[in-house]
Structures are given as structure tokens and as C-alpha cells.
Length: 325
Image (cartoon, rainbow, N blue to C red; front, side, top):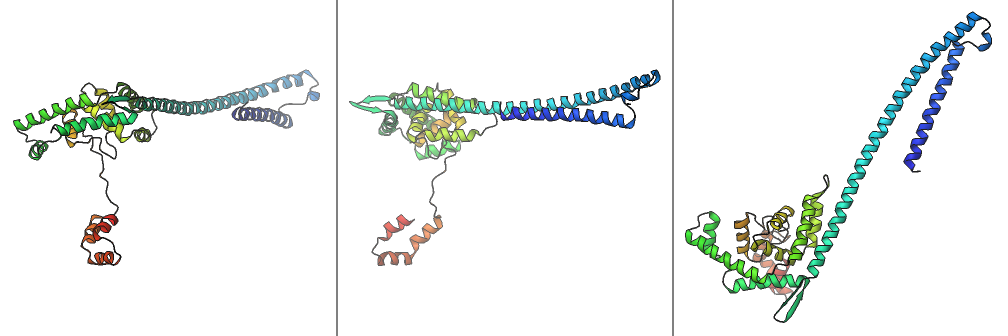
């Protein structure tokens, strides 16, 4: 028997005891007041009739007590039912959260295992796990730079940003996009198990999370398990393969591409992603800054006193200033 069951049993015992004590007290009051005579006082037929009639009053009183007791019992049971319903609801929520977390960690483990199982052999050299993904991303970007398709001319980029691109600008942009897509598809080989497990993980995170819990906590947890190498590779797959609509949608919902570092190595890839999928992958990235304000940095560069102190201590002004700032 649990603690709650023992508590309910004690409450029922006290309730029954209270009712019996009330009945005994009522009988004593009725007898003392003369409404219920002693049996020894009943000696003739008339007194016996009165004695029988007195029980009618007692019966009416007891019926009233029984009705009141019934109302008390119903109210008590209703309170118990409400309490049990609330406890069942809280327990169901706890069970849902526990099941969600268990599935999330299992899917995260499957994804990490699929990353570890990646094996790529190129030029008689074998790459495994994250090293394989890094090699794919670097090889694609290196070939893009070698072919001269890594960036737009500054004037073309400016006109496209302002929405005043000419026909020639659009032709050049489309040509560079085709060159980039070809290199990515050829060198950044898509790892289907990695992508499929990631889609399942993000789908569970974004669309099967129980109501009323902090979604951002689990987003940060999953994002913390993805290295920058993995995110760069995933970004190239989402960029170059048009049929990965589900992957792009989930990446956008979970904000995986908007972490504290850009997922792209080439700014052209950011422009391409924004152009084709209407999502800026680096929109929330905050640039890293020094804790020292820029005004203090400029002041140190102009400080003759600092230069004299550095010379007195035998330090190079430029090196020390750069290190301190």
C-alpha cells in the first residue's frame, strides 16, 4: 500500500467515526430533551403509541443526516477524482517528455554513428568520419577557387544587392552557379545515411516535441553535437541538391545554419542560397569582437607614453600593442 492509499484510508476512518459520534450525540440529546422517552417509561398503549411516533422524528432526522452524508461523500469523491485526474495529466506529461528525450538521444546516437561510418578513398588515401566530410567540403571549395568561379565581381555584386542587376549580370551569376553546383555534386559526395539520419533527428526535434516544454533547450543541445565541419558539409548538400527540400526546411526551423559561425566558406554560396531558397544562412551570426572597445584600441596606437614604456622594457611596440589589444 502506498503512502497516498494509507492517507485515504485514514481519512475514511475519521469520517466514519465522526458520523457515528454525531448519531450517538443526537440520540443522547433527543432522549435528554424528552423527544425520545426511555423504554421503562412506556407502560400503557397511549405511551407506546407516543413512543412509536417519536421514532418518526428520529427517522426524519436520520434521513436528513444520511442525505447530508451522501452530499459530503459525493463532494469528497469528486475532489478525489479531480486530484487523480490532475495527477494523471502531470504523469502523462512527464512520460511524454521522457519518451521524447529517449527517442531524441537514440536518433542523435544513430546520426553520430553514421558520421563515424563514412569512408572515402581518393588518390590512394582513405578518409574516415568527420575527416571524410571535411575533405569533401574542402575539395569542392578548392576546385571552385581553382576554376575562378568562387566570387562575383564587386560591381556585379553591388548591383545585385541593390536589385538593379543587368541582363549580363544575371547571365554571369547563373554561369557561376552552374559551375559551383557541378563541382559540389562531383566532389562533395552526398552521404545518404548521414543526411537521412539528420532529417529524422531534426524532424523529431521540431515536429514531435511535447507541448509546454522549452524547444530552444533541445535545439541548443542538438546544435552543440554538430561540429562546424559537419554543418559545412550539410550546407553544401542543402545548397547543391534541389531535391533536399525536407532537409532545407528542417535546417531553417532548427536554425542549424545560423550558429555562432558561418556555415559557408565562400560568400558566393551565401548569395546562391539566398537567391534560390530565400533564406539567409548567416543572418543571425554575430561577429566576434574584442572585449576592449575600438576607441581604446585607437588610443593605444596613438599613445606616445605606451611606446616609451615598451621601449624601456625592451619590447617591440607593434607586437606588444597588437597582443594587448
